[in-house]
Amino acid sequence: MKKILILGGTTEARQLAGKLVEDFLVTLSLAGRTESPVAQGVPVRSGGFGGADGLAAYLKETRTDLLIDATHPYAARISANAAQASRLTGVPILALRRPGWKPVDGDRWTQVDTTGDAVHALGSPPRRAFLALGRQEVAAFEAAPQHHYLVRSVDPVEPKLAVPDATYLLARGPFREADERALLEEHRIDVVVSKNSGGEATYGKIAAARALGIEVVMVRRPILPEVPSAETVEALAAMIDHGLDPVAERGV
Image (cartoon, rainbow, N blue to C red; front, side, top):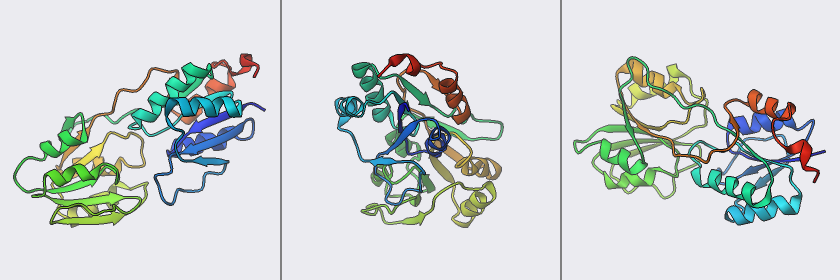
């Protein structure tokens, strides 16, 4: 059986692994940043590889036939390392890249390039901001301590933000629009700060903000390497099934 390494950490990566495991030897790689990841259903490797060279060495050592980048849309460094490791080893690569959200009528988006830009976009007057960014990104908001922050993450933010007014929520999506609307109203939120993650699991806050007329500061996606890709689990599985990648000809 051919060996596939999936760089994961997303719901789609887990779904793809489950779809491929009957026909391939699948290993799912997780960065190890989440303290209590959900069960994956396939063999899991946790932790980094040591950059592109380390990943290339792993691919050679394990005689991997196909590398799939199914990481988060904002995992730009991992995606770059994956593309470079593919070039170094000749192991073909495919990417699973869910489409981003697009503003619709009623949305009040302020689009920025970085988390630091998002801090500046909040402005000087105190505001009540919902930070839906994940714990890795929120430290930047210590630069604007005048705001009240509602911080939601899967794992605890440690250390806490060095700001006088912050509330922390531990929760794992998916999040329904009705629940997100209730959350925004309960905490009197007047601005949501979000990454453009795409997908349905976390779109509820965007729809809720639109319904309530609340501004969204949206951090644009980073530029990722150009590799063969698909937007859905089904489409990527079909690429493999139909031989649109060079796995069958590689003869490892």
